[in-house]
Image 1 (cartoon, rainbow, N blue to C red):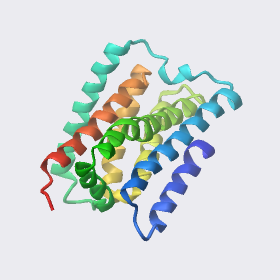
Image 2 (cartoon, one colour; image 1 turned 180 degrees about the horizontal axis):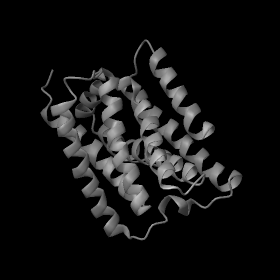
Image 3 (cartoon, rainbow, N blue to C red; image 1 turned 90 degrees about the vertical axis):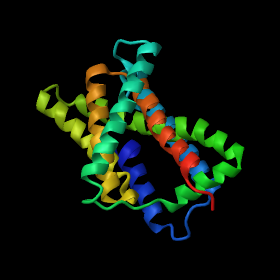
Amino acid sequence: MSIIVLIPFGLMLWIRNHQSTGFASLELITYPLVFGGLSIAILVLIKKLFLKEDLVDFNSGKGKWTTDIAWGFFLTITYFLLFYLEQLTLSNVLQFNSNMELLGLMLDMRENPLLLLIWFGPVLWIGIALYEELIRVFILTSLWKWSEKLIWTITVIFISAIIIGLAHWSQGSYGMVTIGIKSLVSGYFFLKKKRLMPLIYAHVLYDGIQVAMLLLTYPDQ
């Protein structure tokens, strides 16, 4: 847990809080790919070589690619319903920190099709969705091995939601809380279905749709 989750997340938050000059568009594309890709590789190696566990733990539930896609759409709809409810109830109570660097990247992507292709391809699929969902199911499956009691099972879902929420510290209290809430849904889904791919599909769709809408609607400067 320390090697895969706590140390990388802590390092990411430290870099974010101490980076005074901001990130260029190329860095915002390169960092998720390098950081996420290396973390995924380390996770796989630790699970296979050190823990002697099969990766099937992450996708052990019954299902096939068609149902995974269907569940991915269902989760995406659920996330957006929560998004609008959170906008109505929490946006005036909690603080949201706008990510101007990410906005700059999005606007740069409108002028550079290559950046657009890279972001909606390997960055979104590998550096963001696959990385974060693998971390989520690693936390869940690892801690669930300690006990099969229902209270512990539910507690672990909350622990994973808190960790994932805190990892988005830079987005302010609104970002941490709302992402934590969605993480509760993701954790409960994985508890019931034990399928990783619907979580990845939903993550890609949720983030991808929001970025696409931003690119289409944000006024030209």
